[in-house]
Image (cartoon, rainbow, N blue to C red; front, side, top):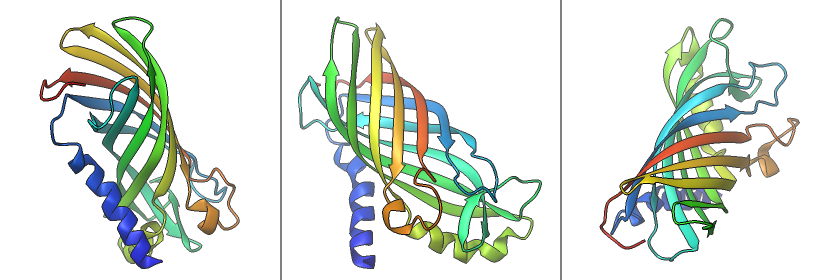
Length: 214
């Protein structure tokens, strides 16, 4: 199990590197992420800001799309009752945790006009959480928190997007991502199926690089 888990992590982290050859565009994303927390005895579901980037994997041609991205977020987690859950700073010894989201999606783009397109895509994502900075007595639970996240990273993803070519060298991309925690299928315990589900809205600024034809 540990060996297969390591292989999955390596593959997910390697995807952005494979796309780095012959980039046709680079997209910088900003947005909001809603992390559903199904544990009623912990903090509320947090709304977090995200920053990231997305690039194409130039192995397919339109109307098919194959993209990969990396996005970052930060959140406070507390460890109690053998699980790590979102925390409110006023009431918990917690750890500020860096979230690293790596995904690859494959989909279809409809183009009703020269400047506008929309579509959908699906794929897999890895959401890796790294506890970094303790608050209060949070340092005591660093090891337990890290181990808890180690097996809880695999998500399935559905994405809907709309892109608008504002001018020749700038395209705005509006997207909605829904990521389901696949790890709940074997490690959800008594929590509801939607625990740790992620809903993310993004605005992307896409810049053509001209290194490869799209």
